[in-house]
Image 1 (cartoon, rainbow, N blue to C red):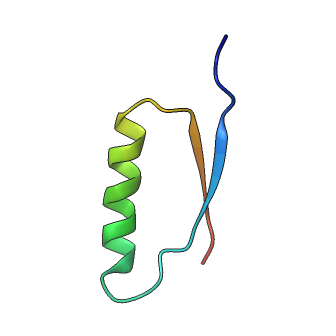
Image 2: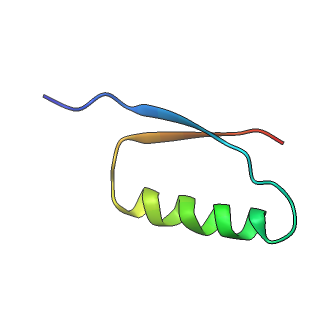
Length: 41
């Protein structure tokens, strides 16, 4: 049985926030955990 895909809303913020959030998303995606990101500006 495959675990359900989780949907996470991402709020990158300002300053260094966008770079940090983008790097964190790449790391999480590399783990192959079933997560879908929804970016909000």
